[in-house]
Structure formats: C-alpha cells, structure tokens
Image 1: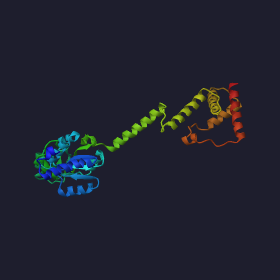
Image 2: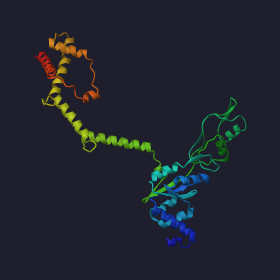
Image 3: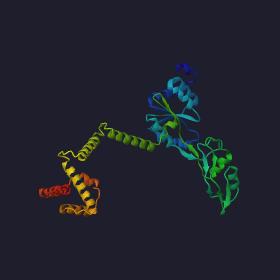
Image 4: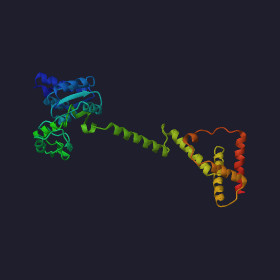
Length: 340
C-alpha cells in the first residue's frame, strides 16, 4: 500500500486505509450513488441504517485508489464508481442489502438535464387545470391537450420521455405541474462485493414471492417424482409404503387372490357384480330368484354414491356376529342362486 500512498497527504492515506480496513471488518461492501438526496433525508437514512449498515463518504479518487491497492477481485469495483459515490458496509447478505436500500427510496419531481429512469407516461383524461396557458405548455412538452367541459383534458396517453433520455426544462416543468414524480431518490446500489464476487443490482433485484413459489413448486415436483419412482426418502417413505399397500391390495382383489386380508373385499366385489348382473337381467325380462330379487330391490333403494374420504378411512361400526352371519349367508346364497 505504501507504494501507492507514499506521495499522498496524511489525511488521504488515512482515508484509503480506513476503506481497506472496512473490507476486512464487514462481510459485504457496496458502492452506492447518493445523487439528489436532500441533506435532511440523508440524515434520516443514516439513522435508519444504524446498527445494520455503516455508510462511509469518500472521494471517488480515494475510493478508486483503495480498490486498486487492495487488488484482486476488489479492483473490479472501480468500474462501478459513478455519480455521487459513497461506500456502504454490512454483515447482511447482498440481497438483503439491496432490499434495505430500496426501502430508502422516495419519488421526487424530475429536474431538467436528468435522465429518465423509466418511460415517463402521461395518461389521457381530465386534469384539474382551467383553460389557459397550460394548454400550450402541455403541447410544447409533447402532450396532446384540449379544453372540454371547462377543464383541460389530455386527449391520449403519451410517452413523454423514454427510459434513458434526458428530460428538458419544458418537460420537467409540465411533469411537476401534473404531479408526476418519476425520479427515485435514495441510496442506489451500483455494485456489491462478497467473498470475491461482485454482484450487479440486476442480480440482486429478485421478487421474493415468485422465488418462493418456484421453490415450493420444485419441492412438490421432487416429492411426486420420489413417490412415483419409489425413491425412498425420509419425507416420502410413508406415502410410498401406503401407495404400495393400496396397489398390492387392489391387485389381490382384481386377481382374486384369496388371502385373509382381502377375502372380504373379493366377496363384496363379487356381490356387487352379481347385483349389477341381476339388475340387467331383470331389465331384460328374466325372472329372478326371490333372494336375488330382494338383494336387487335393496340395492335399488339406496342411491349409488361414492363414500367420503372420512367414511372410507374410518372403520365400519362393529356388527353383531348374527348380523355378519346373515349378510354372509345372504350374499353367498345370492351368488349360488345366480350362478347355479
């Protein structure tokens, strides 16, 4: 460092050393532009940042010299020095720093000679102005105006200044009269440095709600993939086993595998098929056995509906041994009468 600072006045050497020391003391360093911030607002911003970030004023030449002397990736920060630069240091991450600085911004009227930060659009419709010289002023600024109903009206929506173009005096005056404040005034982050990486503001300007939605969707898709591909994880082991159990039970029922845990389901399925076949036979004019006719009549009297999830999950109420025996004997008798 002495090689670069040996010919500097003592106070300038101290400034350069302080900047380098802050890079060692804090996890994140940022370059900000403070152009156009009123002194009272800057003082309030300093108070709001106290305990979270340290704002350091320094001449651009000394800031650039400090970056060059530190060398390495830090030297690349010099490319982002512009406007009324200052340095900000914090132990928060760069994304939180960007969000914090965005909260310091307020809208202000444009001044002649400033560049438009975005397209400045004047919407069509009535204004609060009475007929007078304001009509000519609007038209000179490129805003089509007319008098209607005793008021000045803007005839069509117009882009007065495109993003990046310089605002002239007439445009600035008319925009102020229309109470259009296009200028963001606050601490504008130009670049942030952390662990050898320089972050541009475009990289840090993320929409948290969109980002969270993408993470949630990715988690859901990963869960579904793990479940359907039977990839066991702590989160999917239970659902995978549950899915396997249901599929195995359904296979046993469809294949009529008479295993004790599915025998009742197989009989119930056969009984339902028997009733359906009997109903079709009755509609075709066939005379049914008395026991089958009772079963068909009982089925027809109950509206067909799918059980609710709660009903499907909850075990059926316990029946007496006598009722179970009657149901089983009735079902088997019906099957026997239908199929001989």
